[in-house]
Length: 268
Image (cartoon, rainbow, N blue to C red; front, side, top):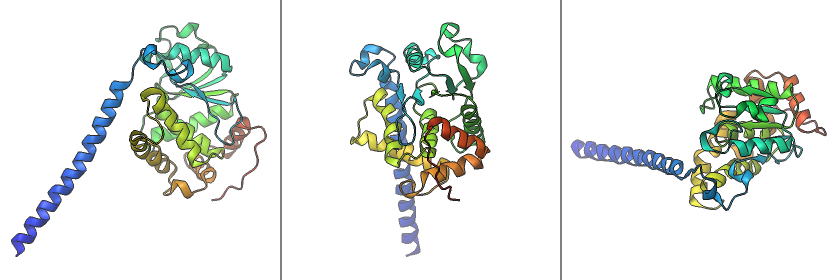
């Protein structure tokens, strides 16, 4: 009898392990297939505007005044061949302050066309962040970025290389701080996956990406359990204070993103 129980336990453990491994493999295969769908050719995205092709957009979630905050793929790095479009879009938007989440300062001069770009004439902070959103490196970078934004003038533009992962989470933190709803934050994050991969709301791919990224990453980053039932404003303030941002800089950034900012009760 003991042998039978032992065998059943081993078989059960095997199947549990196999299912777990299958999920990991499926996830890797899915993201591998996404990378193969990313094209550098403008003609492959004829259904998109130039701005959509460059993943350039104004952040319009609740609490942020129009024309104060933008996000995009890199306006300077030619990796995915969208930089000149993003740079021209930044010029038209009169962006004054760039938050570069992916480069070192020493890299900028090496990019072809950098010295002639609009980007090179404005205020820039380079942070070279990783995608480990709970790491000390990422937290320190967010703190520096918020301080830099608070002490420089909008319009701001946030970017990394592609403008969907590091930029997505950073913008989600700022959107939370400014009073956006969870649905708005998720929708803004997922626009990038339409612009690059044609992933539309309501599709299985959309749900898979949202589950594995923004629905998982933002709660873990802010340190909350139920992202749909939390005061995101309070959670974002607590997070920024915890990682070392001065309350004066938080308040100043809020003011710069919305001149008519209402004073919220900060709930500890």
